[in-house]
Length: 404
Image (cartoon, rainbow, N blue to C red; front, side):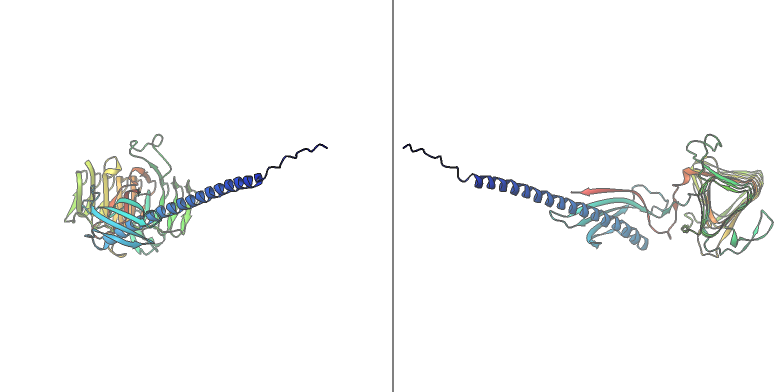
């Protein structure tokens, strides 16, 4: 009888395989946990970096507010802001915009605690007592229509200005150009950016052509035959315009006789009043001329103010005081302006066939028939120094630096 041996079956292989599978799963799980933990940390770091930036940004606003209250404010360290801490340093601005040298370079550092060390962000900016209001061909700063009755030299009769804070008579037109390209040219240098605005009403007579937008804080009246290429809006938010005190105290009046010519070289001037006779001219040379006028401006027929480009003449007429403290800027026929006119407390009356190369922002504006307002887009970023009573606010050259 033959006895045959039977081979023994392998034992333990299943355990080895199971252990290998478990090792692979453990490795995968560990990898997934590590990735998840890393992604979570990255998310927290990103959140902390963003929060640090916002803390630094809030510190900039705090610095501007503190400087408005105390011009000698020099900064703070480790102040608590929105779940983080901030440090602020203040120094005289390396580049001054206003003659009063009130600009301040501000550096803020925001810190937020996070695992692995604090997240930090740094912002640097210059705060100044400046505003940039010249963004319209014409804008009326009056609010709530509280103006009263004023004698209108265009019509020669009293007119109730409470219902017409911006008023363009028959045949008027607005558009825009950019003086860096050259003088206004209806073909080569013209755009549809001649917007009008008012914190109260806007009134367009027949045959007025507005190549731009219109914004009325209260009522917009567009009579039959008038046209507007841009957006029309009424009863919308109002714009804020700062009070401006003269950088140079007005002591004398400026008078240019009929047929006379007066040139102003680059600099800052202050006058109590301005009077220009028929066919007179006021020119500028050498750079930017800033003229402050405390009282009324009376301009005759066929008068030219300024020289191309409009960025070289800045007229600031009565822009401080209360609602009832105002003056007027009145012109005769065929008036021409190369420049910006800012009169927060000034009522502006432009005679028939006036031509503006620049912009007008004032208390109220009445424009005579067949007048043209060519808004110079180059003055949209023109700074307006608000003087000692102004508030710090506008930020220039802000940038972000993330600190490891």
